Length: 406
Image (tube, rainbow, N blue to C red):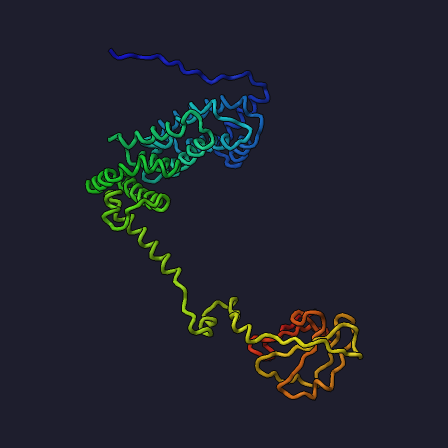
């Protein structure tokens, strides 16, 4: 004899609400279900941040459950999306605990994932977005409330769709997306053993000249299955997957496509990591971008600056002067008729040194004011401040000097 057992489901307990709470509850529900996006955004933000909603939570749960039940029958996609966003706001509220309402909220979320039809026009309406959003919400709740083996029980409900021969491709897509959100281990236990059968079913649907809805669902499901299997191979790295036949033995008809994606990505990574040839240094520098044409380390070592000792100059200010000479090719002497420089530290004029002007062309010398020669400036009487720099090639043409208006 078959034994039956009576189970009594405890209803959600409610408490008497004050007038303010009743007004707040009415305003929130009307704003979320209404057509004003600004009010809806404010209402959802209030549900996510308000710390005094614990007494209102059972009533919000009843509104969500009844709203999902009615609008799935009426194929009202917009209201279903608003209700799922309402659950998300409540779940993200740090002052709320949904533990006492999960027995009502989880079936509503699963209904938005696994229903055969969620909208009036499946060929144009984006019901896929609702299934994906609900799947992410379900996975988030399972991670936050891991009570009474909640994750394993949800996985069992999602796996039942794969054993139902009358389920639609849209319901299979929702189940697969939710299983993928729950983790790689659920994919390994539910999807991998049924991958070959799923490929055969999809090929049968495509060969029977399906309508627009079934064709769109089959293509979307097939592409997502390949994406999930590629992600599984990257994360789990199962042993024994080398040739196409190995992938086909594990993934059935999807094996060839998965092998192609994995091989192409591996080839691109290997080709991108090959070091470039360094035989021609100048050619490598020229092929760099304009902002990265910096000399190599060997070039910098060959063109180091030879910093001399302090040169005492009695007619100038008390600041030290350094003589900087490029070690590379000779530099021509600056024009002796140029205007004298002004010391930016003391403000006194720098007198032109006759010994410097009388030096030959190969030993041109610049007097640099300040402590660090490479960061020193001199100012002309005309008001221009000039920074003395040394070219990496050893020349001092006008293109190698950096002028800045003071």
